[in-house]
Image (cartoon, rainbow, N blue to C red; front, side):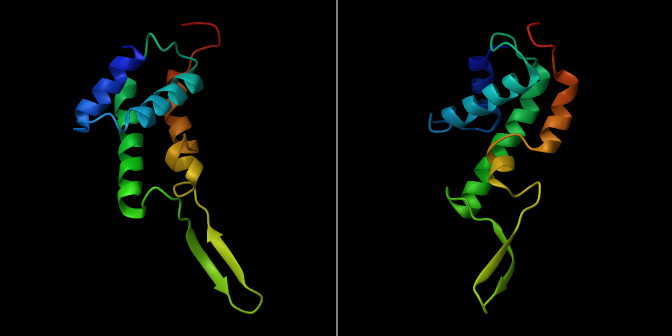
Length: 117
């Protein structure tokens, strides 16, 4: 499956009718291809559910919190004005919009040696 076919398949499975999310889907497809050292002309079909789940996570996050990033607060001290953010693997901006450690662990079995297709 090519990158453009993957984008259309993800849009079809998530029932996305417009082109507003094409860039997000394309970015995720390219991130997966880059991590796995895959050609954009051949992406295994088995990677579609992973890409679909990542895009669904982005859509759910933006539906709940808007397009801005709002990290969770762990503690607030009023004395000298200190705020501590709760940064876990699942709520950082990098893990929401990019590949988290658990995503990379799931993708490891699909990695290719650099230079091979």
